[in-house]
Image (cartoon, each protein chain N blue to C red):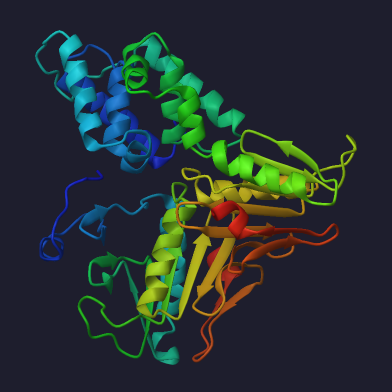
Length: 168
Length: 255
Protein backbone atom coordinates (compact mmCIF):
# COMPACT_ATOMS: atom_id res chain seq x y z
CA UNK A 1 0.00 0.00 0.00
CA UNK A 2 1.40 3.44 -0.85
CA UNK A 3 2.22 5.61 2.07
CA UNK A 4 2.52 9.34 2.44
CA UNK A 5 4.82 9.01 5.46
CA UNK A 6 8.44 9.98 4.98
CA UNK A 7 11.09 7.62 6.26
CA UNK A 8 14.85 7.92 6.45
CA UNK A 9 17.36 6.11 4.24
CA UNK A 10 18.46 4.17 7.34
CA UNK A 11 14.91 3.02 8.05
CA UNK A 12 14.48 1.94 4.43
CA UNK A 13 17.72 0.01 4.43
CA UNK A 14 16.82 -1.68 7.70
CA UNK A 15 13.42 -2.80 6.40
CA UNK A 16 12.51 -5.74 4.20
CA UNK A 17 9.55 -5.26 1.91
CA UNK A 18 7.84 -8.14 0.14
CA UNK A 19 8.09 -7.43 -2.74
CA UNK A 20 10.88 -4.93 -2.35
CA UNK A 21 10.04 -1.26 -2.92
CA UNK A 22 11.82 1.73 -4.39
CA UNK A 23 12.80 4.54 -2.07
CA UNK A 24 12.38 8.00 -3.56
CA UNK A 25 13.28 11.03 -1.51
CA UNK A 26 11.86 9.66 1.72
CA UNK A 27 8.86 7.89 0.22
CA UNK A 28 8.37 4.20 -0.32
CA UNK A 29 7.17 3.50 -3.85
CA UNK A 30 5.67 0.16 -4.72
CA UNK A 31 6.75 -1.42 -7.95
CA UNK A 32 4.13 -2.82 -10.29
CA UNK A 33 4.79 -6.52 -10.57
CA UNK A 34 3.41 -9.89 -9.64
CA UNK A 35 1.58 -10.75 -12.84
CA UNK A 36 2.54 -13.62 -15.11
CA UNK A 37 3.50 -11.55 -18.17
CA UNK A 38 5.86 -9.46 -16.08
CA UNK A 39 7.38 -12.38 -14.19
CA UNK A 40 7.83 -14.54 -17.30
CA UNK A 41 9.64 -11.87 -19.23
CA UNK A 42 11.78 -10.90 -16.26
CA UNK A 43 12.75 -14.54 -15.81
CA UNK A 44 13.47 -14.99 -19.52
CA UNK A 45 15.83 -12.00 -19.60
CA UNK A 46 17.57 -13.05 -16.39
CA UNK A 47 17.96 -16.64 -17.59
CA UNK A 48 19.25 -15.56 -21.00
CA UNK A 49 22.03 -13.43 -19.56
CA UNK A 50 22.44 -15.54 -16.44
CA UNK A 51 23.35 -18.59 -18.47
CA UNK A 52 26.06 -16.58 -20.24
CA UNK A 53 27.63 -14.89 -17.23
CA UNK A 54 31.00 -16.66 -17.48
CA UNK A 55 31.22 -16.38 -21.24
CA UNK A 56 30.38 -12.65 -21.22
CA UNK A 57 32.20 -11.78 -17.99
CA UNK A 58 29.14 -10.29 -16.38
CA UNK A 59 27.05 -10.65 -13.26
CA UNK A 60 23.28 -10.79 -13.65
CA UNK A 61 20.96 -10.11 -10.74
CA UNK A 62 17.25 -9.57 -10.34
CA UNK A 63 15.54 -7.09 -8.05
CA UNK A 64 18.74 -5.73 -6.62
CA UNK A 65 18.67 -2.51 -4.63
CA UNK A 66 20.60 0.17 -6.49
CA UNK A 67 21.35 3.50 -4.84
CA UNK A 68 20.89 5.88 -7.75
CA UNK A 69 21.40 9.04 -5.71
CA UNK A 70 21.84 10.09 -2.11
CA UNK A 71 18.12 9.85 -1.42
CA UNK A 72 16.91 7.39 -4.03
CA UNK A 73 17.04 3.62 -4.32
CA UNK A 74 15.64 1.82 -7.34
CA UNK A 75 15.16 -1.88 -7.91
CA UNK A 76 15.58 -2.78 -11.57
CA UNK A 77 13.85 -5.98 -12.66
CA UNK A 78 17.16 -7.22 -14.07
CA UNK A 79 20.55 -5.69 -13.65
CA UNK A 80 23.81 -6.48 -15.45
CA UNK A 81 27.19 -5.60 -13.99
CA UNK A 82 30.48 -5.99 -15.79
CA UNK A 83 32.77 -8.44 -13.96
CA UNK A 84 31.92 -9.71 -10.53
CA UNK A 85 29.50 -7.80 -8.36
CA UNK A 86 30.71 -7.23 -4.82
CA UNK A 87 28.46 -4.56 -3.34
CA UNK A 88 25.49 -5.74 -1.28
CA UNK A 89 23.63 -2.64 -2.39
CA UNK A 90 24.86 -1.34 -5.73
CA UNK A 91 26.33 2.11 -5.45
CA UNK A 92 28.49 1.74 -8.54
CA UNK A 93 26.42 2.17 -11.71
CA UNK A 94 25.45 -1.15 -13.29
CA UNK A 95 26.19 -1.44 -17.00
CA UNK A 96 22.62 -2.32 -17.96
CA UNK A 97 19.26 -2.08 -16.21
CA UNK A 98 16.24 -3.87 -17.63
CA UNK A 99 12.72 -2.85 -16.65
CA UNK A 100 9.66 -4.90 -17.55
CA UNK A 101 6.48 -2.87 -17.96
CA UNK A 102 3.32 -3.78 -16.07
CA UNK A 103 -0.15 -2.76 -17.23
CA UNK A 104 -0.14 -0.03 -14.56
CA UNK A 105 3.15 1.61 -15.48
CA UNK A 106 2.65 5.17 -16.59
CA UNK A 107 5.01 7.04 -18.88
CA UNK A 108 5.92 9.68 -16.36
CA UNK A 109 6.94 7.18 -13.72
CA UNK A 110 8.82 4.98 -16.19
CA UNK A 111 10.70 8.01 -17.45
CA UNK A 112 11.56 9.09 -13.92
CA UNK A 113 13.13 5.68 -13.23
CA UNK A 114 15.07 5.81 -16.51
CA UNK A 115 16.33 9.29 -15.74
CA UNK A 116 17.46 8.11 -12.31
CA UNK A 117 19.48 5.27 -13.85
CA UNK A 118 21.07 7.47 -16.51
CA UNK A 119 21.89 10.20 -13.99
CA UNK A 120 23.63 7.60 -11.84
CA UNK A 121 25.79 6.58 -14.78
CA UNK A 122 24.07 3.44 -16.06
CA UNK A 123 25.12 2.97 -19.70
CA UNK A 124 21.99 1.28 -21.02
CA UNK A 125 18.39 1.01 -19.88
CA UNK A 126 16.10 -1.39 -21.71
CA UNK A 127 12.35 -1.27 -21.12
CA UNK A 128 10.35 -4.24 -22.35
CA UNK A 129 6.58 -4.26 -22.64
CA UNK A 130 5.20 -7.81 -22.57
CA UNK A 131 1.68 -6.81 -23.58
CA UNK A 132 2.49 -4.84 -26.73
CA UNK A 133 5.91 -6.42 -27.31
CA UNK A 134 7.32 -2.95 -27.58
CA UNK A 135 10.89 -2.31 -26.57
CA UNK A 136 12.42 0.99 -25.53
CA UNK A 137 16.06 1.86 -25.11
CA UNK A 138 17.58 4.73 -23.17
CA UNK A 139 21.21 5.79 -23.25
CA UNK A 140 22.88 9.00 -22.12
CA UNK A 141 23.67 9.94 -25.72
CA UNK A 142 20.49 8.97 -27.55
CA UNK A 143 17.92 9.49 -24.79
CA UNK A 144 14.73 7.45 -24.63
CA UNK A 145 13.49 5.88 -27.85
CA UNK A 146 11.57 2.90 -29.12
CA UNK A 147 13.62 0.04 -30.52
CA UNK A 148 12.38 -1.52 -33.75
CA UNK A 149 14.97 -4.25 -34.43
CA UNK A 150 15.18 -7.92 -33.54
CA UNK A 151 18.28 -7.97 -31.35
CA UNK A 152 18.92 -5.51 -28.55
CA UNK A 153 22.59 -4.74 -28.36
CA UNK A 154 25.06 -2.81 -26.24
CA UNK A 155 28.53 -1.66 -27.18
CA UNK A 156 31.75 -1.99 -25.27
CA UNK A 157 31.23 -4.73 -24.35
CA UNK A 158 28.77 -6.19 -26.81
CA UNK A 159 25.81 -7.82 -25.07
CA UNK A 160 23.06 -9.04 -27.33
CA UNK A 161 19.52 -10.01 -26.48
CA UNK A 162 17.55 -11.60 -29.34
CA UNK A 163 14.00 -10.52 -28.62
CA UNK A 164 12.55 -13.72 -30.04
CA UNK A 165 14.31 -15.56 -27.19
CA UNK A 166 12.50 -13.65 -24.48
CA UNK A 167 9.19 -12.80 -26.13
CA UNK A 168 8.69 -16.41 -27.23
CA UNK B 1 -15.86 -9.77 -13.87
CA UNK B 2 -12.49 -8.29 -12.98
CA UNK B 3 -10.45 -9.62 -15.91
CA UNK B 4 -9.96 -6.14 -17.39
CA UNK B 5 -9.05 -4.63 -14.03
CA UNK B 6 -5.49 -3.53 -13.46
CA UNK B 7 -3.80 -4.76 -10.31
CA UNK B 8 -4.39 -1.37 -8.67
CA UNK B 9 -8.08 -1.39 -9.59
CA UNK B 10 -8.45 -4.88 -8.14
CA UNK B 11 -6.84 -3.71 -4.97
CA UNK B 12 -9.31 -0.83 -4.78
CA UNK B 13 -12.08 -3.44 -4.59
CA UNK B 14 -10.09 -5.39 -1.99
CA UNK B 15 -9.61 -2.29 0.15
CA UNK B 16 -13.25 -1.25 -0.37
CA UNK B 17 -14.29 -4.60 1.03
CA UNK B 18 -11.96 -4.03 3.98
CA UNK B 19 -13.40 -0.54 4.57
CA UNK B 20 -16.93 -1.94 4.49
CA UNK B 21 -16.01 -4.46 7.17
CA UNK B 22 -14.40 -1.74 9.31
CA UNK B 23 -17.61 0.31 9.10
CA UNK B 24 -19.66 -2.78 9.89
CA UNK B 25 -21.61 -2.39 6.65
CA UNK B 26 -23.62 -5.33 5.32
CA UNK B 27 -22.44 -4.52 1.80
CA UNK B 28 -19.77 -2.57 -0.09
CA UNK B 29 -21.19 0.91 -0.66
CA UNK B 30 -19.89 3.65 -2.99
CA UNK B 31 -18.18 5.41 -0.08
CA UNK B 32 -16.18 2.26 0.62
CA UNK B 33 -15.10 2.16 -3.02
CA UNK B 34 -14.00 5.78 -2.65
CA UNK B 35 -11.98 4.98 0.47
CA UNK B 36 -10.45 1.99 -1.30
CA UNK B 37 -9.47 4.23 -4.17
CA UNK B 38 -7.94 6.86 -1.92
CA UNK B 39 -6.04 4.18 -0.02
CA UNK B 40 -4.68 2.47 -3.11
CA UNK B 41 -3.77 5.15 -5.63
CA UNK B 42 -1.81 7.92 -3.97
CA UNK B 43 -0.76 9.44 -7.29
CA UNK B 44 -4.35 9.84 -8.43
CA UNK B 45 -5.38 11.00 -4.98
CA UNK B 46 -2.76 13.70 -4.87
CA UNK B 47 -3.70 14.89 -8.33
CA UNK B 48 -7.39 15.09 -7.50
CA UNK B 49 -7.33 16.02 -3.83
CA UNK B 50 -5.03 18.79 -2.79
CA UNK B 51 -3.73 17.22 0.41
CA UNK B 52 -3.74 14.23 2.68
CA UNK B 53 -6.00 16.21 5.04
CA UNK B 54 -8.71 16.00 2.36
CA UNK B 55 -8.48 12.21 2.49
CA UNK B 56 -8.82 12.31 6.27
CA UNK B 57 -11.75 14.69 6.05
CA UNK B 58 -13.54 12.34 3.64
CA UNK B 59 -13.11 9.48 6.08
CA UNK B 60 -14.45 11.64 8.93
CA UNK B 61 -17.44 12.70 6.84
CA UNK B 62 -18.30 9.08 6.11
CA UNK B 63 -17.98 8.22 9.76
CA UNK B 64 -20.29 11.13 10.66
CA UNK B 65 -23.14 9.94 8.44
CA UNK B 66 -22.72 6.20 8.96
CA UNK B 67 -24.48 4.54 11.90
CA UNK B 68 -21.97 3.07 14.35
CA UNK B 69 -21.96 -0.69 13.85
CA UNK B 70 -19.70 -3.43 15.09
CA UNK B 71 -16.96 -4.47 12.68
CA UNK B 72 -17.70 -7.32 10.35
CA UNK B 73 -15.15 -10.10 10.16
CA UNK B 74 -13.07 -9.98 6.98
CA UNK B 75 -13.93 -13.65 6.43
CA UNK B 76 -17.62 -12.77 5.87
CA UNK B 77 -18.57 -12.39 2.22
CA UNK B 78 -19.80 -8.82 1.63
CA UNK B 79 -21.69 -8.16 -1.59
CA UNK B 80 -21.50 -4.97 -3.63
CA UNK B 81 -24.49 -2.66 -3.16
CA UNK B 82 -26.64 -1.94 -6.22
CA UNK B 83 -25.08 1.53 -6.47
CA UNK B 84 -21.56 0.10 -6.28
CA UNK B 85 -22.43 -2.36 -9.05
CA UNK B 86 -23.57 0.58 -11.15
CA UNK B 87 -20.31 2.40 -10.38
CA UNK B 88 -18.36 -0.57 -11.71
CA UNK B 89 -20.57 -0.69 -14.81
CA UNK B 90 -19.96 3.04 -15.36
CA UNK B 91 -16.22 2.45 -14.96
CA UNK B 92 -16.37 -0.12 -17.75
CA UNK B 93 -18.18 2.42 -19.92
CA UNK B 94 -15.56 5.06 -19.14
CA UNK B 95 -12.74 2.69 -20.12
CA UNK B 96 -14.61 1.77 -23.32
CA UNK B 97 -15.29 5.40 -24.21
CA UNK B 98 -11.60 6.21 -23.79
CA UNK B 99 -10.75 3.12 -25.82
CA UNK B 100 -8.68 1.75 -22.93
CA UNK B 101 -8.26 -2.01 -22.83
CA UNK B 102 -7.57 -2.11 -19.09
CA UNK B 103 -9.83 -0.76 -16.42
CA UNK B 104 -7.82 1.36 -14.00
CA UNK B 105 -8.32 3.51 -10.94
CA UNK B 106 -9.08 6.60 -13.04
CA UNK B 107 -12.07 4.83 -14.59
CA UNK B 108 -13.32 3.82 -11.14
CA UNK B 109 -13.12 7.44 -10.03
CA UNK B 110 -15.09 8.60 -13.05
CA UNK B 111 -17.59 5.81 -12.36
CA UNK B 112 -17.98 6.94 -8.74
CA UNK B 113 -18.68 10.50 -9.84
CA UNK B 114 -21.42 9.34 -12.20
CA UNK B 115 -23.44 7.78 -9.39
CA UNK B 116 -24.35 11.35 -8.48
CA UNK B 117 -26.91 11.00 -5.72
CA UNK B 118 -24.86 8.72 -3.49
CA UNK B 119 -22.38 9.46 -0.76
CA UNK B 120 -19.08 9.06 -2.64
CA UNK B 121 -20.02 11.49 -5.39
CA UNK B 122 -21.53 13.89 -2.86
CA UNK B 123 -18.35 13.92 -0.79
CA UNK B 124 -16.22 14.54 -3.86
CA UNK B 125 -18.57 17.24 -5.14
CA UNK B 126 -18.43 19.01 -1.75
CA UNK B 127 -14.67 19.25 -2.29
CA UNK B 128 -15.08 20.80 -5.71
CA UNK B 129 -14.42 17.58 -7.60
CA UNK B 130 -16.72 16.94 -10.52
CA UNK B 131 -16.69 14.62 -13.48
CA UNK B 132 -15.62 17.57 -15.61
CA UNK B 133 -12.76 18.63 -13.34
CA UNK B 134 -11.47 15.05 -13.12
CA UNK B 135 -11.57 14.61 -16.89
CA UNK B 136 -9.62 17.85 -17.26
CA UNK B 137 -7.11 16.82 -14.61
CA UNK B 138 -6.69 13.37 -16.10
CA UNK B 139 -5.35 14.43 -19.40
CA UNK B 140 -7.52 16.76 -21.35
CA UNK B 141 -5.51 19.76 -22.34
CA UNK B 142 -8.13 22.50 -21.95
CA UNK B 143 -7.41 25.91 -20.53
CA UNK B 144 -4.43 28.07 -21.24
CA UNK B 145 -2.30 25.44 -22.91
CA UNK B 146 -4.85 24.58 -25.58
CA UNK B 147 -5.79 28.23 -26.21
CA UNK B 148 -2.15 29.17 -26.62
CA UNK B 149 -1.52 26.37 -29.06
CA UNK B 150 -4.68 27.06 -31.06
CA UNK B 151 -3.73 30.71 -31.28
CA UNK B 152 -0.29 29.78 -32.55
CA UNK B 153 -1.64 27.33 -35.16
CA UNK B 154 -4.19 29.90 -36.37
CA UNK B 155 -1.41 32.47 -36.79
CA UNK B 156 0.57 30.28 -39.20
CA UNK B 157 0.51 31.32 -42.88
CA UNK B 158 -0.61 27.82 -43.99
CA UNK B 159 -4.33 27.35 -43.62
CA UNK B 160 -4.21 24.16 -41.57
CA UNK B 161 -7.44 22.49 -40.61
CA UNK B 162 -7.66 22.36 -36.83
CA UNK B 163 -9.87 20.10 -34.76
CA UNK B 164 -9.84 20.72 -31.03
CA UNK B 165 -10.94 17.49 -29.35
CA UNK B 166 -11.32 16.83 -25.64
CA UNK B 167 -8.04 14.94 -25.53
CA UNK B 168 -5.94 17.22 -27.74
CA UNK B 169 -5.67 18.94 -31.08
CA UNK B 170 -5.75 17.28 -34.49
CA UNK B 171 -4.18 19.15 -37.40
CA UNK B 172 -5.16 18.57 -41.04
CA UNK B 173 -3.16 19.75 -44.07
CA UNK B 174 -6.06 21.99 -45.15
CA UNK B 175 -9.60 22.92 -44.15
CA UNK B 176 -11.36 20.58 -46.52
CA UNK B 177 -13.77 18.33 -44.60
CA UNK B 178 -12.54 15.29 -46.52
CA UNK B 179 -8.84 15.47 -45.55
CA UNK B 180 -7.56 13.46 -42.64
CA UNK B 181 -5.50 14.77 -39.75
CA UNK B 182 -1.76 14.16 -40.10
CA UNK B 183 -0.74 15.44 -36.67
CA UNK B 184 -2.02 15.07 -33.14
CA UNK B 185 -0.80 17.31 -30.34
CA UNK B 186 -1.81 16.47 -26.80
CA UNK B 187 -0.80 16.42 -23.18
CA UNK B 188 0.93 13.23 -22.04
CA UNK B 189 -1.95 11.45 -20.26
CA UNK B 190 -0.79 11.38 -16.63
CA UNK B 191 -2.68 8.29 -15.61
CA UNK B 192 -2.70 6.25 -18.79
CA UNK B 193 -0.32 3.29 -18.72
CA UNK B 194 2.49 3.41 -21.27
CA UNK B 195 1.46 0.17 -22.97
CA UNK B 196 -2.09 1.46 -23.40
CA UNK B 197 -0.84 4.79 -24.70
CA UNK B 198 1.43 3.08 -27.21
CA UNK B 199 -1.45 0.90 -28.45
CA UNK B 200 -3.67 3.94 -28.96
CA UNK B 201 -0.92 5.69 -30.92
CA UNK B 202 -0.76 2.68 -33.26
CA UNK B 203 -4.51 2.85 -33.72
CA UNK B 204 -4.20 6.50 -34.71
CA UNK B 205 -1.44 5.64 -37.18
CA UNK B 206 -3.67 2.97 -38.69
CA UNK B 207 -6.25 5.70 -39.30
CA UNK B 208 -3.77 7.80 -41.24
CA UNK B 209 -2.12 9.96 -38.58
CA UNK B 210 1.61 10.47 -39.27
CA UNK B 211 2.83 12.44 -36.27
CA UNK B 212 1.92 12.34 -32.61
CA UNK B 213 3.36 14.91 -30.20
CA UNK B 214 2.81 14.48 -26.48
CA UNK B 215 3.79 17.21 -24.09
CA UNK B 216 4.26 16.92 -20.35
CA UNK B 217 3.94 20.44 -18.96
CA UNK B 218 4.94 19.41 -15.43
CA UNK B 219 8.37 18.06 -16.46
CA UNK B 220 8.59 19.83 -19.84
CA UNK B 221 9.38 16.51 -21.43
CA UNK B 222 8.19 16.08 -24.99
CA UNK B 223 7.58 12.76 -26.73
CA UNK B 224 7.06 12.26 -30.42
CA UNK B 225 5.84 9.24 -32.32
CA UNK B 226 5.95 8.53 -36.02
CA UNK B 227 5.08 5.20 -37.62
CA UNK B 228 8.63 4.39 -38.77
CA UNK B 229 10.44 4.87 -35.48
CA UNK B 230 7.71 4.62 -32.86
CA UNK B 231 7.74 6.61 -29.65
CA UNK B 232 10.74 8.60 -28.46
CA UNK B 233 11.70 11.55 -26.34
CA UNK B 234 12.27 14.79 -28.22
CA UNK B 235 15.27 16.82 -27.17
CA UNK B 236 15.19 19.86 -29.45
CA UNK B 237 13.54 23.27 -29.28
CA UNK B 238 11.29 23.15 -32.32
CA UNK B 239 8.92 20.31 -33.17
CA UNK B 240 8.58 19.84 -36.89
CA UNK B 241 6.55 17.87 -39.45
CA UNK B 242 7.34 17.43 -43.11
CA UNK B 243 4.97 17.53 -46.04
CA UNK B 244 3.33 19.69 -45.00
CA UNK B 245 5.87 21.61 -42.98
CA UNK B 246 4.62 22.67 -39.59
CA UNK B 247 6.93 24.00 -36.91
CA UNK B 248 6.09 24.39 -33.27
CA UNK B 249 8.69 26.15 -31.11
CA UNK B 250 8.29 24.63 -27.65
CA UNK B 251 8.65 28.07 -26.11
CA UNK B 252 5.22 28.81 -27.60
CA UNK B 253 3.54 26.25 -25.37
CA UNK B 254 5.85 26.03 -22.37
CA UNK B 255 6.27 29.78 -21.84
